[in-house]
Length: 111
Length: 115
Figure 1 (cartoon, rainbow over the protein chains, first blue to last red):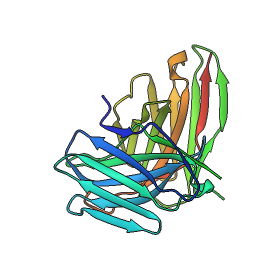
Figure 2: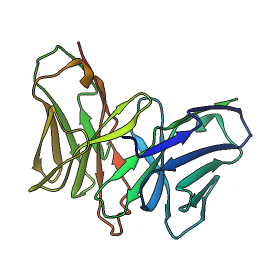
Figure 3: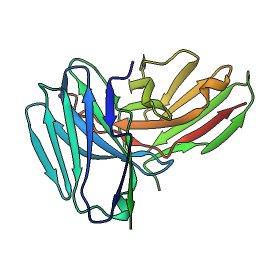
Figure 4: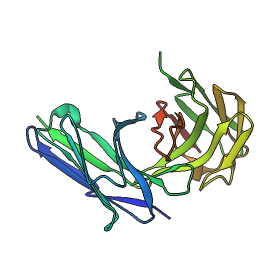
């Protein structure tokens, strides 16, 4: 069964707007990561937030984590056409040796 | 050169054929993984290896086998391919950093089609 799920499945915005995507998960985690995937390519790590953190920033990325709701969000500010990609959350589960991945959000940024 | 290299990039095969997908890495990481990606399902773990003598099943290992030939090489085999194994396959590596906070480094993927 899918441990992580993202919403929306697809998002289309104009360049310069902000993009927000959400991840909900089912198990206890010790960290939550976000990855980016350009079409048909491998995933690239973007940012990691620990379970004792509520918010983290990296450049134009802002990640929040609410462990009580088992949810996380990724905000990309001032989006660019080059941000067009799929974005996946991935959870590091307590007591487990590997990550689970969400279903992904396909972001399209229109120039 | 890519740090994690997968070969082939694309493969078309027929039902019942044996297929091997190969992965090599120059990152010096001990941990290697095989995932498959299907539309709408995200990535699912097939097998993982934490060192040359350690092989572990993931959530969808049935119909697959792996071999860790060296620290840098991890291959995935489909002994008798079937159409529902058509998917995009990824190899990934990580370096253990404790507290389960490893970041994964992915290859470019192998698109496998089983007819």
